[in-house]
Image (cartoon, rainbow, N blue to C red; front, side, top):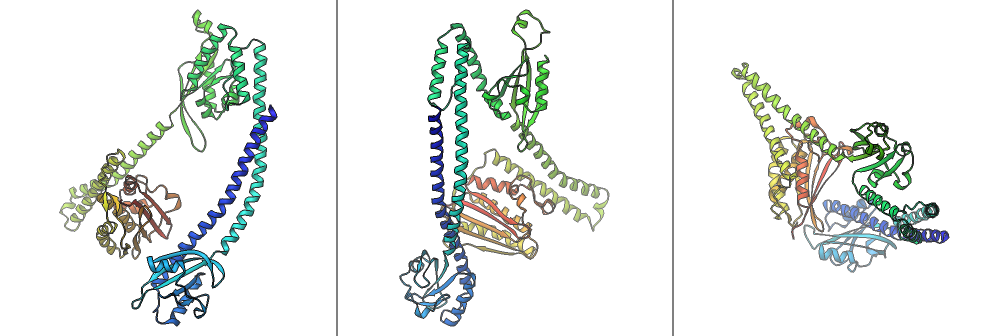
Length: 593
């Protein structure tokens, strides 16, 4: 039976492992090729954008040929085709000897839809290429097609290298899988030993049942049969055993960790929650000295104090290194039954009960509340101090100073306005987090949204001599959202871009349509955001450059509000940035319809 269980486990595990490795080998090559083709298409699309910007006159073939050679430095093959399919210029071959390209699929798609792409064998250079073509309308004359291509030879080499590595890794994994199978067989052998020990206990008059085992196999069926045999014996013992099992079930189902320790400091019982908290094997730990299973000195101290008879013991402890968790610990002594009946209060306890209650979430909420109060107090303190100081200065005599009194009043008004903005943002954020944000969904034109935000942004950008451009492709479908909230979201991103972009910088806003969403990109040439801060910039009051943000009147809540607005629309908001190179904020909103 032991051999059958070994093969049942070992062969099944190895078969699944081999199947998984074959599947990985099969699909990894396809994924690699697919990713490489997507990357090549993206690179070709960028090169086509550059090509269109610097397209020479089509009727000057010499200049067109020089232009194709210049573009070919990027590593791509460049071809110019007229509306009849005739090749006007090609960077890799003499156009005079090339056949008509009117039947090429990417050329046909480009003339029909404006864009075309394909992956096929080139008859001219006799190699597999990724083609991407785009229709181009010269200032005069019929349209032409600009086509670029990249070879796939490097992809085939990468596939070969990947397969070699996968084979080597597969052999290692198979060896490890065999070792794991042996380890599992030892576990099953231990189960057989437990059944043998149970039979010996029954022969000696110990009728405690075995715990249920999973999965249900021959050993589990045998355990059930032995439990039934033991249950048919002495009625009194069976009744006591059932009562004990009911109490154990109640304790094991509790979310609090519960453990019982006897007078010899051995772990008599612990429920699943207690085992998970201390990372124990509950079945293997019971009966062991508590010092072997509990490695927390403060918890051990409470247990020993309870075993000495002290009552009302309660304390808070923290466990974990990477992710700490806080627990409220209660320890109480268990008085012997004889001492309880006789009323002897000085009898030594027969054991102790320890209860662990997880209060990590409560501690986290307390820290969040404390941080929020500290941040709000700090944000309010600066403008209030300024208002108070300048008001006292005016009352002390500066009110009669015609050179400074107006300036002091302007400063007071500026800080009062900052307080008002901070209060409005706090109220708005509180309303959003309370789920009271009202979103009136309707189709919203992205072009009109960008135009309304640009009117305000242009004035702010001109004051800092920042170049500001907006690029929206024609025919961009509308998004589904609330116009006012989307305006606030985009205006916040633009204000941040202006705030963190130095004079003479540049801000670009663009929009594209994906399959199910529109993506608005705000690009600046500002100071950039360190990688360590990029995941935290959407938190309340978090600033990368606190001094500059406060100097410009920022509240530190804008990006947090923007994040909530995007999530309320079912969209996404993320950032890509590098220090000293600027930032790119992306907003993806689902399309209407």
